[in-house]
Length: 317
Length: 288
Image (cartoon, rainbow over all chains, first blue to last red; front, side):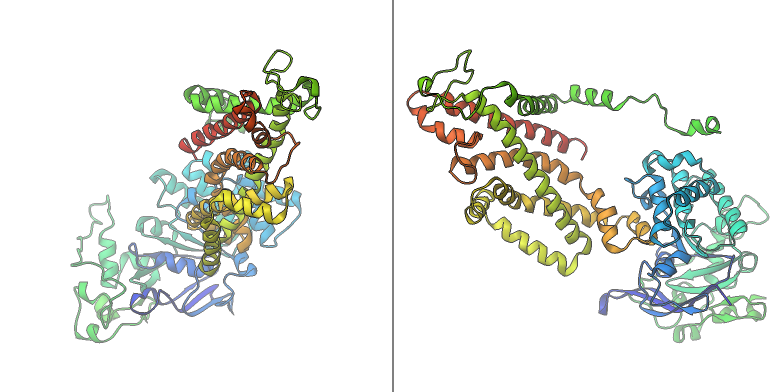
């Protein structure tokens, strides 16, 4: 049984002709202790999906099952918050600038009902700062006197305070320098090994995803188009969108360099999607069926899920 | 251990708070003048009444004496020492001005945060009620309220505070509208803060900057309003030593040449309002 299961989750902003479907029927599972990478271009609905999962935004359709229980209507509750936490993209903005680090870190303990004992809270703050690689002396500081990498460590610490089983990481490294990025990824992996926490790691940075994710889901226009083990995605991408996305990753290995696939046209607006596959207008493999019918995620014998009529196992070879 | 990470800490040699303040004051003369004036008023209000004569003692033998060494501001028509009265009034007027500024800032900001953070219908109702308050000139509103509630210092404080509420409601609402979109609000929600706690523990402290600056200006205006009400005979009554009361009492003396009974308390009002204005303006123009 998976830790988190999303079943046809939808999020539509606005109503009527103004309606913007940001997430369109996402079905996805995250197992205990694993890292599921979620990749896709800006505006594809990754962050909205993240907010729906942690309960910051209410889903407009579908079911969210956590640990075998349907929590669709309870994602904002205390018990759920305790188990599912999030780290956001902008560490500097995600911390209240006026509060000392210790105050920020104490909040989840008190407010999520972990402990009220001041000495226990103190102990846990020191311990957690050490876990994320900060000197416990930092507890008296305010976010403004920390660097971006340090702020992100504090944000990670806050997310871990309530000992969650799943942490949604929404582009946790994309606003950081390359050198710090690597260290944060290493820290996240180390924490996962020690604590068995599962990650939903959202990013448009494919090389980072490759380093941390066990499985990868590719999102396009509010829909998951491909899911598989990380190596399978990178070595054998089957959805034409995934192939194009991967071809854009710079590589220093000349032999490994792929031919760059440049997709024609723009990503269509989610407000006016065509009938059939939403990728049809840019797809090199498009055929008649794609214009009539929207492909669902189909599983091949090796467990590789792909939502494309042209990418059935025979084609993918 | 602490040695090995110390390079990451900001240098402890950075100038202290006092040094930074004095540097700031040297760069901004108006701020310095305002601060100096307020400090002078503060000293006057705190120690003044202890060293001057009784501001209420009448002396029929020494009526309307011009300023002299014995009576620096002269005496009034009852022979009371104008300097003693003006100093005693400083304590009352500054106190009332500050209380009004704080009361209207706290109440107005709470209402403003509620409107800005919750938005929707709550915001709609609050803003329309605020518009009603704004429909009256502040001074007239205060006048009506005191007239309705009766003359007393607490009533004056309440009435004038209410007349300044709209400033704070609007300022804090606008700020809260911006702050609620900040990512730290999501962080606070994820950490388990219920909505009221997000609003008052997280959004409100981050939305008070403009209101705090405004409060400095309001303290000055409040003194002017209170004195104005007293001048019209509303709120604070004679023989209480209060600047507005004194100006009212001395107004007739000006015509007959005894300018000091009204001019000195009037000057005290002007300087006090100016002092608050300089400080408020400079703080607002600098870094809010």
